[in-house]
Length: 183
Image (cartoon, rainbow, N blue to C red; front, side, top):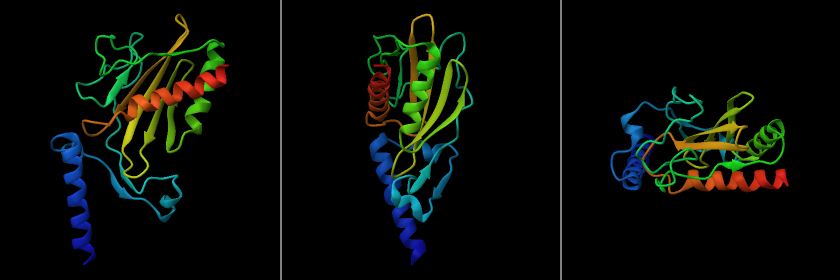
């Protein structure tokens, strides 16, 4: 009985994902980790499921640029031309020192739920954000450009096609919280 109930649940889940992404979801096309979280998931700290996908290996800053967004609508990048309104977003401006700006940025990131800073340097932060229920992971990068006093940002979903605007909303939430620390 339990096996058939789980099979039905995952069948409905995959059907929902297909409907949301407009086709076969990426989780069925690429290897990913799917786990059932512990009983503490109800506290809101960890997602109930984890559709984390495979971490990308091509992230980082190359020649002063973050990776371009794919053609899917689940990514925003401040280094994308404004003519690409689907992916373009403004960088985060700062008025403090670069060191303080990076410290403020990390404080904002660490204050958000289901977030992990994966790597950082004196001008770069790479973090992972997981959704509350399903545990979908988004890769979010920040590049501090000292010459322009801005922090460039790229936020992209690992799996699926649509993110229902989550990446853009996240960057705007980070921008607002960051601005409050900079004031």
